[in-house]
Image (cartoon, helix red, strand yellow):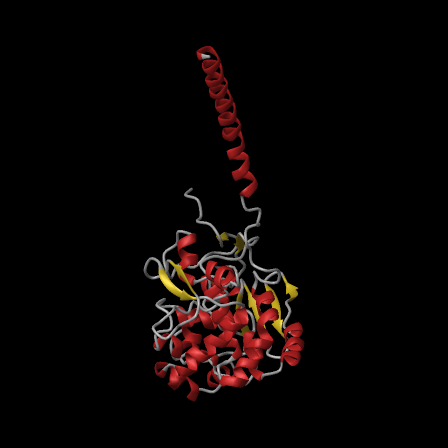
Length: 337
């Protein structure tokens, strides 16, 4: 009897160990089978560039402009900047295209995200359209933004500067960021309130190569582009005041962008940049061979490079002029001989 009991106990122990090993084998398989196979959420197709973003949301921005008086160009530019063209974490996790934080009056869903401070509370929306609606309502209901609605809907520059003044964003260059985005992508055409007309104008604004240094970007407004900077050629009889009015420029902008004296007078045939020049020429334009009559300033205008940077790249003293036949470096610092 005792022997039988011992054998039974031994069989139980063996069986238990066998089952234990089976469980150890099955546990990892269980967790593997339960692992989520849901793919990483990525921005939806159609987002990721200025053209695609504008195409997707232009009608919504125009509709909101008609409802609230906020320029469509401002709405689109803010959305592009704040959401990185729909690719930001807030955009694809929370459909929040404008970085609007929770604030005390928000009762909807939320998401926490590192911004000016760690783990800040942001509003979460069920779809991007709701973010656009809330953006409009946020501006129209806030007393600190009320002065903006006295500005014409077509004056996007005043709107951009007003948003910065009202404290919409902490970035000190926020107004200029909006203006550059609007001008680079011709978003101002949507402020006229007709997306079909705007679409035709966008097609007219497509870049057509004219020569290796220039590209026509606006047939109607004769704006050209060099080194990704918009410029015009002064026409006979044009005054500075006429140019500033036509292109909605402040008094200081033309002189600063073109490195001219504050009281300069435009001359027919002169290049005038409507945006700041860059620190180096565009890729592919490494050097310029000086011709008779070339100056450092004329070269800087020809390639859209800041004059002080041109001197620095070529290890020259400011005011020094090159002689015919020498090479002027446009993108990299000239090697030491």
